[in-house]
Length: 176
Image (cartoon, rainbow, N blue to C red; front, side):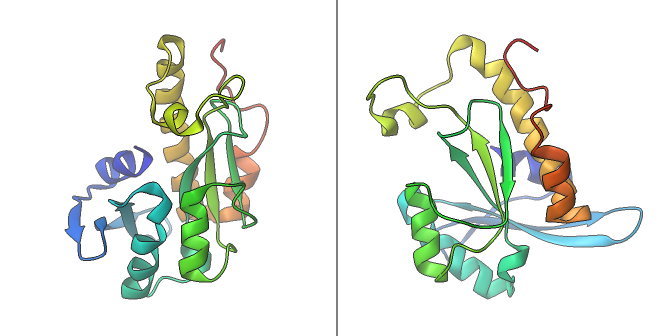
């Protein structure tokens, strides 16, 4: 959903790629310089995301430091964002697939908090289910803020985006 919003804002039109997904290349003008960005969306099962990401990077000659993987994170409450430089998968099967195909987990990521199900609920059904009525409005604000974080990352770099968007003062609670 975030990548769709970025493509919409930046004028990208997704096309099916030969690597099990869709991609578009966009040029983002800024007051200082223009940036070429490749946006990609795997069409595989989430736990096979590396089947798409690795060949996309290779084809476009994208360095790992220039990759930003955007993914859900059940360990963060709904509405929280966290940019990180690398690290482990936290049990996220899509990240594990990307790690396997790239041979490392050391690349920037943007985690979007989706919260965790109460008790021992089936996590697959939880992450694939619709948001509760009070959560949907919040999630649309989260998508807008996530788009802004991606724009900051492209234009100013990971450190600036981390400083701006990893703070606890981000107004993303259901009650704000």
